[in-house]
Length: 85
Image 1: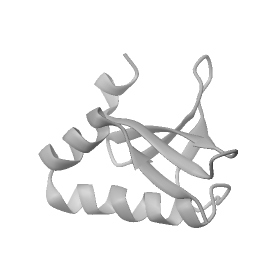
Image 2 (image 1 turned 90 degrees about the horizontal axis):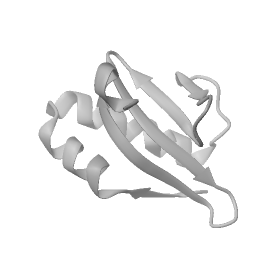
Image 3 (image 1 turned 120 degrees about the vertical axis):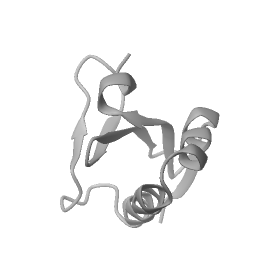
Image 4 (image 1 turned 45 degrees about the vertical axis):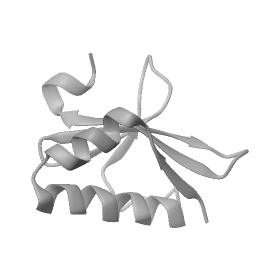
């Protein structure tokens, strides 16, 4: 099982976003911590950038998997138009 670590921008956005959406992201990352290679979540490897993205509605989360430390590192969360900048 992997641990989950949230960077400051991700933690900040989780407190500002609507509560039902934040709980969906938290539960999705709990599922990723159990098995990072699962295919039932809408995740993709990012092209031109290190990491993955998780899509829930019009919101995205950027994360990376650190296999040597057994950590899912959540880098940032935000609306689709702003997250990739």
